[in-house]
Length: 303
Image 1: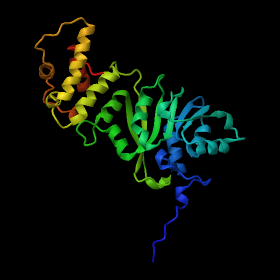
Image 2: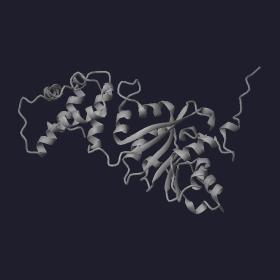
Image 3: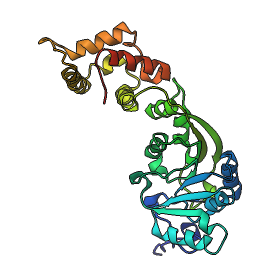
Image 4: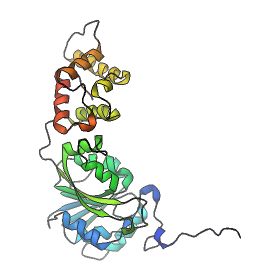
């Protein structure tokens, strides 16, 4: 007997018969208890403007509209925009909802006090930093992430999942795991488990140039199990940092010796500050700040 091709069932579609697009990471949160929990953990005020990214069919949006002054919903799929508009039409929420159509990563973020969202998981990392570098500061963000990504956000030095994402996020914010969410709470169910995370930006932020910091952690975590001494001896790293150093000296009108050796200079800085044998996977924020200041003091820059 020939195999009969299985037709897509209701789980592949929304209530209105909309087929969700995998390219957009569309998994609609359907459990009202999870939605209510996210709203409660946001500690919303009646005067708040809330940013929601990927509102989908509006299950979370409606609960937010009940609590706040304004919800700004960013949605890339025009089909879901139409459904969301239809859902609030001729209700008290119609004038409280603002919809922005397009890719949130390519758009300037509006003003908001709080961000609450079940986001497409493929934009998790760039979105986190877009939010944390946004000004003016927002109060907090309550976001749904893939579970492993959420664990990376809160990982500590020495943890298996500790990485550049961990330390860069924790430099700029306090991050807490709020609740675990199983895949069956979504329609259609994703292939991964999820977690809700609460992020509070550090205000004021640490007095560190984030581009410099990001450049340093990018190099250090490129081989997080190797010693810093070994990492900074790599030719690609040395070439980039020598170029930056020559630009720095040019701007400062400082002469560079003919026998200048960038690898030797990097090694001297690491040894002088006892960092040569350290590994990124076990270094905390204070140690990275100390290392960055030591490099900058000697004219080594990373942006």
